[in-house]
Image (cartoon, rainbow, N blue to C red; front, side, top):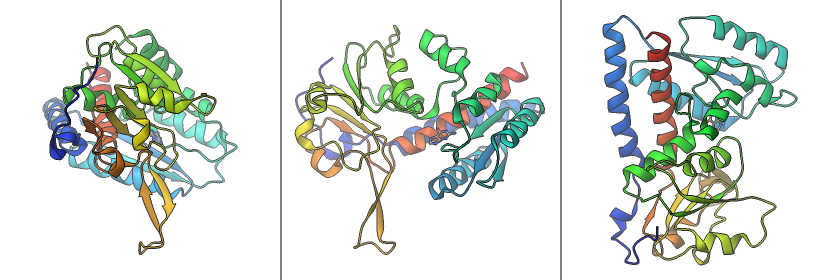
Length: 303
Ligand code: GUN
């Protein structure tokens, strides 16, 4: 579905992830309160292995939000020398603990730990990340009984709640990762009135990536390359979602580095009909979906 040719004013061009996440948090907090009246408190356990600085920040933010919404939470911090066997033993213990409703093991995991093995060991009913093969399969099949990965689930909510029409839209997703790109495509291709898009998934093996981007009504950048998407790559009136969080050298900043997205935001702003700011776009939605998935896990476990 083509987006409007006229470009709205700058404020209405911005997709405000913070306020949309707050709307979702309100509904989640109401569900936490309803569980509380039955004597149930949803409990989310985080596992972080090693001291990846970004993972420390992300897990800290997720835990803080859990507490704000009235969930119980705990973070296990394991040294980077942890073996896969030790990590699997911890997951096994958490799977068996009935007080734990959700388990989140923050990626990336230090090698030689195999992420696929670890995620496959989490009970699908506690897999609030949606990374277990059962949940991945359900998403692909259009079976809504599984858990949807938080970042692509959050982008889907951002788009639908911002009034972006998906049915028939040409969507280009940049990046084929298991956390964003692949599940994003799986969500948007479903035969569902909230999806039904035509999706092109571009990656490092794609020829003429700019030509694909230029065709997109909706462009979702999760490629991990700082400011990869330039103004000349985007159709006038397109909707652009920036998933990237890239640290680059910045001699002008006090820390010597700066965080930038996968799109050249300033250059794209005059061209697009809608765009996510970064920060304040996708990030808060990832957390909102995690909270919602955890409360749903608690509801299902105690139904
Ligand atoms: N690392 C980056 N994004 C995510 C996520 O959504 N879940 C987990 N577990 N790790 C991540």
